[in-house]
Image 1: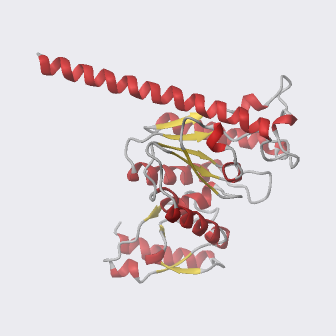
Image 2: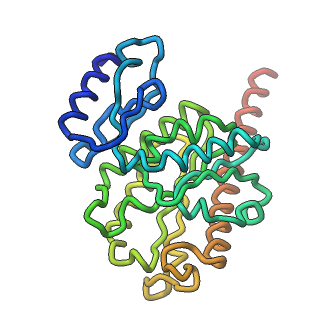
Image 3: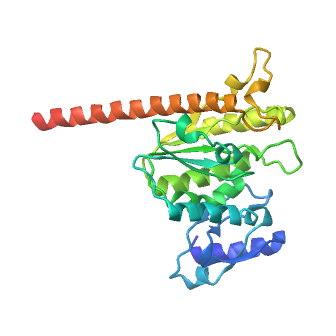
Length: 285
């Protein structure tokens, strides 16, 4: 299917679903290649080709549930413009647990983090904004945590929808920096959303499966460490709102994330050394 054909299909879908949302010119925003309403799983994005008039003139409707984050993304872009990334940095993207992580520099040392989270993020909107969040950066790896697509409400996403959005984000990252590892952090079993944890566990299982089947993608297991011996959330790991991590919760989180990074980078270094030794043997022979 050509880009122009896709653009026409998008326009028809937008009319059909009746998006009540801001209209944005395609040359300024990614093109939504699939409908993002619940009737159609997955949100794929693609940069607009400014040399293709059929695409450049296409008016794209952005659902208000996604467009409402525009100011937050613009603030992160301003931060990108005002700062430079340290060599070998780790890009952290996702929802409020990333945004609120004020001690990330100390907690993740000796790794050098770039913190680009926004409160309330879902995989759905992160997939739309992935290009703007990821491409400005030169990183050693990405760590992603998103926990709001399932909260026990009527608008919860399905596991299949979430998989489509995650695949889209991974596509953006791996096209931008092929071979760089991307880590997905398991969704935490919070007291506030405990009634929805059965479905959240299904999402975690799907995220783990994605990491097992996609190259350069790794799952960071955390959930069991936040549960007591009765499989109930440990309250001291959570803030007063029973949703976000406490200082002690962040301390544990950082240890688990750092341990996984250590393991993966060590294995990658060993593989690189093994390949170099093999190459040297062949050269010597």
